[in-house]
Length: 156
Image 1: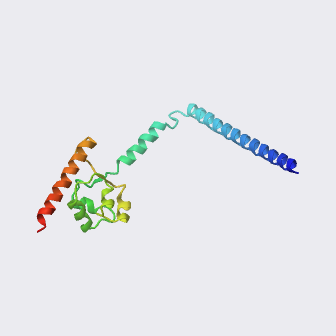
Image 2 (image 1 turned 90 degrees about the vertical axis):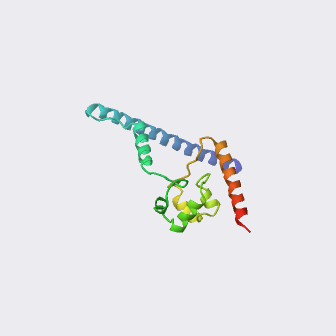
Image 3 (image 1 turned 120 degrees about the vertical axis):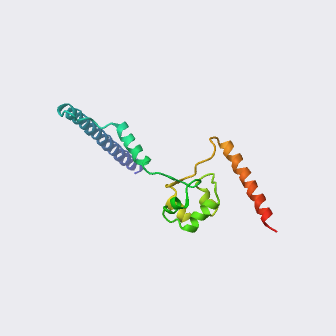
């Protein structure tokens, strides 16, 4: 009985595999026919050009370049308030706690709520003062130390 079950299972697998191979081959034949049709159309129709992958990539790049990101390290209050969900108080907090090492600092340090951050994260950036990471880290460490000293002096 086990041998019969194994035979039926192997037959089913062979049938399934054969069907899959036939479907894949027919799909490949359809794609080849479409490519041939497209090539023949480009010959028959003057002024017709086949779609170019580079042209599509350039068009997509241009579309994404149209969105101007708001720099949280340098934008004024009016620009920050144009962002969805940012109130006047949020804009004031963002400006008061500058500079930011990255845009995630807004949510990680409680400057704005997580909900607001997720609404604006694709619309903002945090431009850095220096080109190298080491210079930026040194700058932020120095700034952190200065702020701590200022806060210590302010407390009686």
